[in-house]
Length: 402
Ligand SMILES: [Cu+2]
Image (cartoon, rainbow, N blue to C red; front, side, top):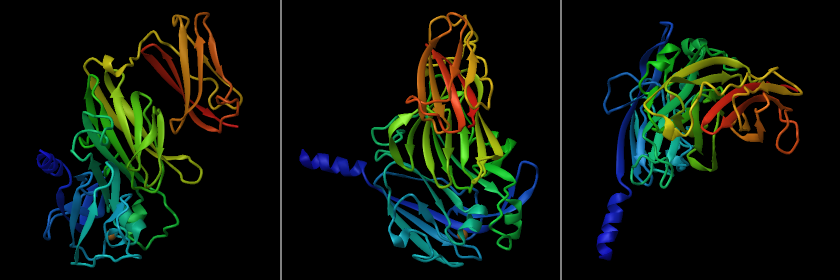
């Protein structure tokens, strides 16, 4: 009996996973305005031939698996595969300064034990800023030990999953390939999964649809050089994990900033029928200004009730006035909304800074004085003010300046 259990357990756990991947430098990518650029990158398969994908293929294994990436470099420059966030040993780290790079025509087998289930990335670490800019990056998704559709073993379940890897293209960097000034980065194209502009919404690996109360798991990874601010305000969200580990406390987020190299796992449900949009803004590293944007449509159909939230025509909250504001911002509440309205104010990272209850019975106005729960003035920035009455939710975005 004990023997049987042991055999069963070992069959469920660690397997050997062999992935055959090559690097190529002969890619072409057509951007949304018709511009064609050269790309370098990875693709699956062994032997010479083929062109690279941008991003590279999504690599997948179950937690505990012994993963072998049989890498062949069929290109005129050295490359590596750096397993970003996987904490592998030095020989498998793909950092040429501390280990070695794989020369033209060379090959190497990277080995690692798949760590905690979650979202990871990989990229070439040779002349990193150029090679990543040219397209040498991708995602690694580690599933629970049983390979099931849970964010991790015992974690939340999902019905469908999308992996988004963001980046940018500076056309000068792309064309001059190393003869340019790397201190000046002025990206022209803002990418999700190697697509920009209208091509993003047309990419079935990026956009998705939800039926009824289905839950999507979004694996967000940033392989560009700019922080990306997400706007989820038209959807139900729960941020459950970051950098391959569950968060101590998950949180709802109308907005979320994913810095270069970071990953976040976000559960998404629809709150209204039809097409909602997830917005991305690519921010200047120094002053936070918006340098570019992208939009991903999410289509919802069928009854939404199980998601717990419905937009309703009779739940009317005005936009905040003024915005930007320094001392206070006001919202007019429609007197048809009898009863208590719960107000939660979130910062752009989705942290709740204030919770209050009010009532619109007398045709009221809600005034936020820009202070947090402890009475301290909240830092300047974008805030999402969420009004909730039963299943009805409306969110208003305001900007606080000091
Ligand atoms: Cu490279």
